[in-house]
Image 1 (tube, rainbow, N blue to C red):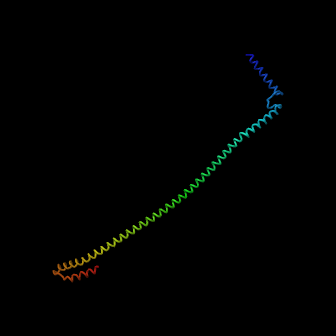
Image 2 (cartoon, one colour):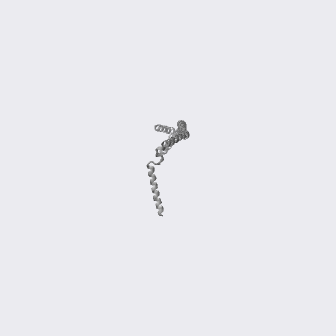
Image 3 (cartoon, rainbow, N blue to C red):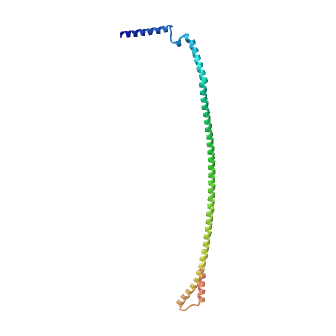
Length: 191
């Protein structure tokens, strides 16, 4: 066990010594050594040129193609959206025009129907009024005829009644011409 400690101490001393040697001008970290700068720069330039050629010849055309395709897709989508918008606006205008036309037709049909119904009801009213006027005239004629008949019967009835009353009161029958003259005079006064 003691040997392992000694080896560890000796190894530690050896590592420290090599670090001092490198720092004093020995071999240090290769990228920072002056002797390797030209070869490192040449390697860097070659790697950069190779990377540039690969990127510019392979990757950038693919990226450019993707960007162009995407732009074409966007432009196509925008054109399609504009076309659909124009179509929808045209359809909306056509709809509004048809709606206005339909409203105008409906109003015209309504007005025509209203006028027809008004004319029809006016004709029916006129016919009913004419019918009622004819019935009224017939009724008035009938009433006048009945009245004339009744009045002619009244004269005879009045003459008979007056004759009967005078006979009852006086005991003698009056002359028919006298009774008729008295009834006529009485009827002329009331008529």
